Length: 253
Image (cartoon, helix red, strand yellow):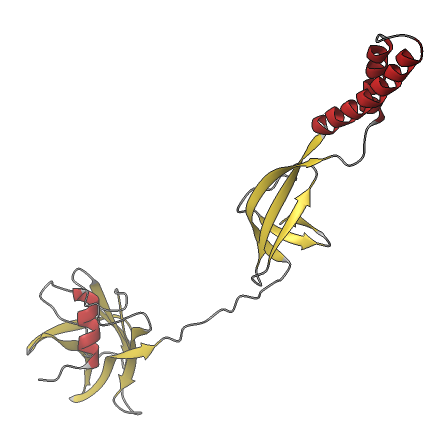
């Protein structure tokens, strides 16, 4: 026996069949009135979402000719039929309700309303349909100036040039020590050599002391490019920060 597409989709919804996807379809209902001269003007059912399920209270509403007899019939499973009589709550408005039972199978059933007036019977149907839902693909615009910090590293840089204090201080100390060696011309020569050696030593000591900490911030931009930005002081960025390129630097955004 062939099963309808509606039955297969509903089976997938309630039984969790992985091969049936409900992501792009939904069940919608259409009211169909039998003829243009029908005394039924409208037929609606409320009280459920998508598909009637056990415990849902279905509310039937029929608009039509006044002082008529109105009922709604529908199959709940196999050939088992339910018939709900509606009462006229306002002139021309008929209402009734039904609570869905666990044994009811209403997933692909059509509800039919019957309005009888002077032995004439008019009908309207509430029919389920499958509607395909088109997925809306939102394209993300790429901004080459937008990116994220992927790494922050530190490194040391020796200060370029020599600070006079180190060389001069070393020369003074070296000259004093050289002056204490020997006498006469030898003493003068030792003083000069001591001053030169002290200046060189002071220079090297000063270089070792004046190492500066720098920061390298690596950013991956939305266009896929990666770039490093170097700072002489802590720029305050951490991995994961969203940033924007501004000239030759970056800023948080």
